[in-house]
Length: 370
Image 1 (cartoon, one colour):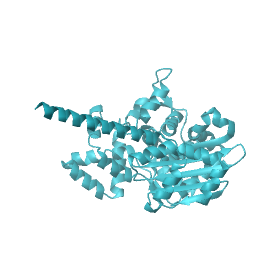
Image 2 (cartoon, helix red, strand yellow):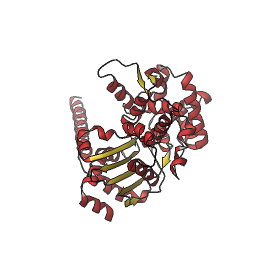
Image 3 (tube, one colour):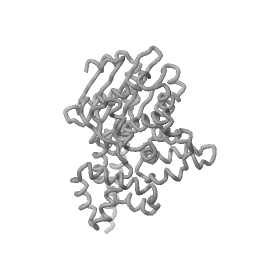
Image 4 (spheres, helix red, strand yellow):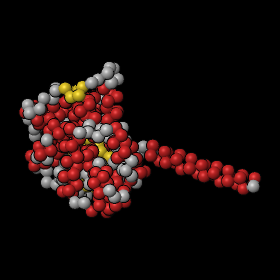
């Protein structure tokens, strides 16, 4: 009996040791800085159709890999909302200084679904004092700087989805799926389960087969219902329990898609500062150009902006910059169907890759020859 007990204890100890070694190796792997990782990853996965990279330098294409491949954008799509916000603010359609009660944003906040982005934004507001309301411009800032999904969905209501989806036509973007309320879409499985009284597995099968027109229609309907009758704290907690990895994958795969080619065309317009009216840029730059709040960046860049996005399966990033030697760079990178390690390593190394391209001529030539 005692021998068996000690054997069991030994087996548990060995298992814990193996897990500890695995965790250590995982952390070491994802924490290692390697600016070349992104480029190597693109070359390795190019034939899968799950990765796309396009870089433009001084109006010249330096690399195009699957640049016309439609891939889900995740939060990078919020650039479109920022553009519509700036346009409407410049035209006086909305008042960027209008105060927004934080409770109005809570209607669209679902805990544990945004990586803590909304809470991080709220914490930044309340560092010095208690805050009850913020200007509409700060709501837009929280959408870009912190990637708050609640702020994004609130702005969809303020700006109007039809107006947001007209941005593509105005910009001459050829391949972009419509924007719809992506937070509200998370509730569709619960809605189906409540309507039909069926199991989670049956709901999952229906979700996989549902066409996008019904999916978007349901998301919009849920969004509209939350405006006047938001979920209670308990209801939010209950529906989060349904969102296992299978449901998250369905949701992730159905996020609005576009191409790096189209986003490079958008970034180019933001970078040159001549496409929109001056008043539009005045509203847009404080939101989009978070990079310029860093004093070090101010020393060598005239302007720079970016927006990234991610889910458990996606990593995307779109950035533009003009340095003080008047070199203009636009970089768009989209990847889907990632493993946990791939997602973590891309997230870790995107900034290093961008910086190396912007500052290292030899590296730019290396990229150009690929």
